[in-house]
Image 1 (cartoon, rainbow, N blue to C red):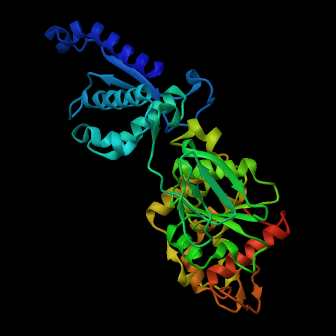
Image 2 (image 1 turned 30 degrees about the vertical axis):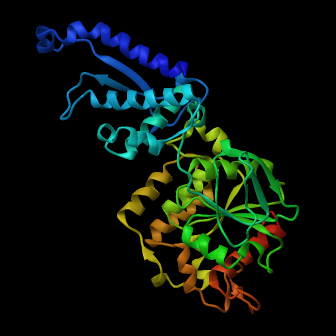
Length: 387
């Protein structure tokens, strides 16, 4: 709360000093009037030290400034968000970013403005959203009876192997209960694929080495989903793999990167959200020929795909195998989405790349065959090649 109050005090102090010059016609004409300047964390650049704000990149917000629209609007939006955060802290009642937007729609104009300012302030103060009593609406889902979540409200989540549960905010969770036989965790990029696996009761598939847990963030994951995966990464036994199924394209790899290494947009929280144990199960563009999938079945990459891939290749920390997959995608000019598994020849073992007789249950479905083969291989041999 003190950080919010200090920010407002700094603004008012500068404003009181600048007012005489700002309203002096002679000063305005000469361009010598004082400006009000606030410095916020620049989340578009990489931090050098997450513990020292002085070492982190900053951006300036100045008033008055030359602009086509009202130059005071960015300040008005910033301090409206700061005011709502202060209110949430003072009343000790969490507020969602969506609620903030609807408090002043005409001022903010879009939800993205609120989202950006909340994260800007959190990064500037070196706090998490939760510390500011702000939360985003949950969207992640989980399925599998191998994990039971006890909420502070007394509700219990996660007792179904066929129906999805909404992943709650960490602030609402009392404790986790992990099943003794939990053998694997699968993070799925797409909700449609997740729902298919739930319908097939894949979490307890008879061909797998044990029951598992399936999670999706519906594309780029929200904080609640990332917190769950980080908690599992920190607390599950080392023999339980945490695997990710994403599209074999630049955006799929970027989503994988958010789970494993964190995001640029919320790098001030990466230390508490990144889950280093997440492994890339598939799909890999380089494995498609071994799956019996013709190149003609793949979608051509777009200009956006190429731009994203080249941007990711500039990341110094990018794992070597991820880099090779991106380079392969750029060379072949094709991308591999999860759904392309439907084009795999049924007589092939998609996990091992050789002919295999498939019998029993839903194992004949290409997606299921692919996952069963790969998950079994990783569980049997933790050193099995994986990205």
